[in-house]
Length: 336
Image 1: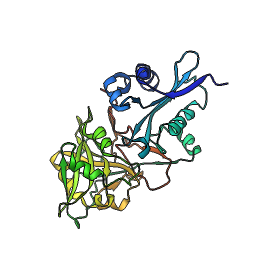
Image 2: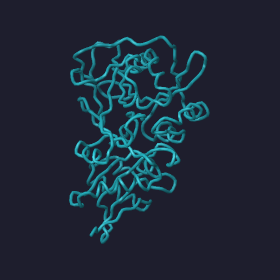
Image 3: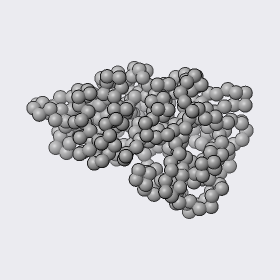
Image 4: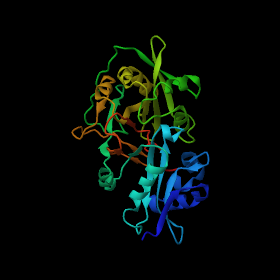
């Protein structure tokens, strides 16, 4: 007989959840030490986006899993499950019950996972989910001869397409121009609405994101590119963390990416993604990071680790969906 029960968390559970994260997930983690950021991420109106498995006798947390939503109305979007952890002594199978509880009861039909621990891959395969890695593409700054963030042994900078002139116009805040672009993309999966873009990027309390409208020569804008410039002691890099709109338009912004990495003195631009046609990335002048490529394009900056990193994901959909680095918690601060 089970001696635990599962429910969604509430505001009164925050301190216990943060203590659990600090003890069992990672000591000093930002979600275990900074309450204001924890609430920004997971407290939506009066709902706390965590599911808990609690001991029936002590009410102590045995297992938990948080989730982030892709739009304001859960029924219209998807969730990304994050911080999935159980106590070492917790019953076997309790973790699976917790994530199934979220999927069945949170009000959305789809739950994605990005940044899987390799040990959990068999669980997701057993659920019938697609498990794969994000593709990692990058473009070096052609004006640099030496690289310090990246470790470059093979310096190859592909050409890019210039057949359709598209400019990147920076959007400094939320409003009609941003909302008009977002409203054109309601068929993209996971669906991301205007509320999500503002919460995730425009109003982020720690990171500064840059939002770029892709503007055609006739003034038409159909798509949105989102980047974050990472500043480190070794140098700067431009990280493309999301793209919402017509992915085919990515193929015609290579010259604009070059302009930005030159102006910001970045060593390179990179993008982790899945579902976007490779031709679009190649047309943009980006190179796919593969094992045979000996270059090192780091992913971790907090703290900095100069090594290549594979990002695993699990999806309930087999095709017709897109994942980017900015999804789930893959571009979240980890330390203060």
